[in-house]
Image (cartoon, rainbow over all chains, first blue to last red; front, top):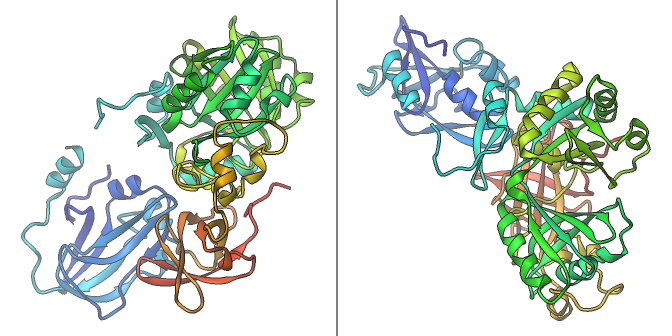
Amino acid sequence: MEMSADLLYSKDHEWVRVESDGVAVIGVTDFAAEQLGDVVYVDLPEIGAEISSGTEMGEIESTKSVSDLFSPIDGTVTEVNQAVVDAPELVNSSPFGEGWLLKAAFEALPEDLLSAEEYTALTRS
Amino acid sequence: MVDQDLRSTALEAVHESLGAMFTDFAGWRMPVRYDSDLAEHRAVRESAGLFDLSHMGEIHLRGPQSAEALDHALAGKLSAMGIGRAKYSLLLTEQGGVIDDVITYRLAEEHFLVVANASNAAVDAEELRARAAGFDVEVDDASDRTSLLAVQGPAAEQILVDLLASEDSGIAGITAEDLTSMKYYRVAEGTYRGGELLVARTGYTGEDGFELYVGDEVSVELWERLAAVGGDRLVPCGLACRDTLRLEAGMPLYGNELGRELLPSQAGLGRIVALASKGDFVGRAGIEAAEVEGLPVLVGLAAEGRRAARAGSAVRDASGSEVGAVTSGALAPTLGHPIAMAYVDPAASEVGTELVVDVRGKDLPVRVVEMPFYRRV
């Protein structure tokens, strides 16, 4: 896996990258993308929606299954990635890059987010 | 993460070396995809795919009364089959419900092979054995020693012809001419490395294709030969694309569209049940006594957009009344829009009827359409 050290991870397989101004980018990990199979539909919250850590914020569908997307942080959605809505396969081809899902403004990050090392251990358990 | 309780096919190491992602299917550890299930689906529609279906059950019936025993045990008139023919049939309960859907091949006057779904293989063998009691026939469940490889797609015939033409092909008793002249739902018998080989022109994908039955001891070698001869034309395929392929082709899946509580006529399979052409058989009395009027019937549904209904989603009519439930659904890879199968009230089953599916809390407008959704040209 191409785990990135400057990301934080949730146990629900989302990643969080903090941008400098109190805004975080959120996506799903390549581990999750691989488990899902080819992603064909992504349902994301609207701009302005409040999201909270560990609760459902959308859905991600592969040809075979539907999975809930859980928010890894508490915050307010400031941007959704229209490119991934239009081309959900970006979740598979570039989960940490072009396949990002949304950005959210936050005040504090939950303490239970995992480091790359901890997340990798989780996916191997 | 290997579940010790799962069974695996003789090809497991091959799948692992190809980087397969595995799933538990009916107690078997089977490849769900190797890389992209959409690419695998496309390969079968446009070129060819190679499947390991060794989890399926192979039950032989041999003896002077094989045909009579099957006429009694299954819903169809198997005794009317010519040698070298295949037939889709059903194993019914006394009440007429579906225990399994099976393909039966007639290999000789006194030899039939019944191919069962993996989830039902043991039950089918037991039922066939019980129902064959009193007939002069031997029931031999060969599931544990038989591998099944499927080569499916428009390039399948050429790949098998190339296999036969390859140096030291290992195949005897079947010629290229036999293959190219073989019609759909036919089977030919030969040998591979001296062991029994069956080549059938059957499948579960809606494409032309072949299914090859060999002993477990040679299946790895046959897979590797096929892969080598097929080259870029032949893509290893997992169960994920098998499901979307069969769904597009409008083929029922046991456990979704078929079950013990459902009568064949509800699934549109009334024609499989040979009420007129043969005598008594298991399920006849149940089917004749059943009140079928008003029972839910299987329909195809199509929608726009990308969001798919899934098994269990409720189906409602224009007035908001619940009229049924989805049994299978996906975004159809070849068609590019969502499709589904559902059991609905007969009043809501006419082609063209506008319905609504509750897709996890959001309404998805759908219309009843003819099946299959996809038909090869």
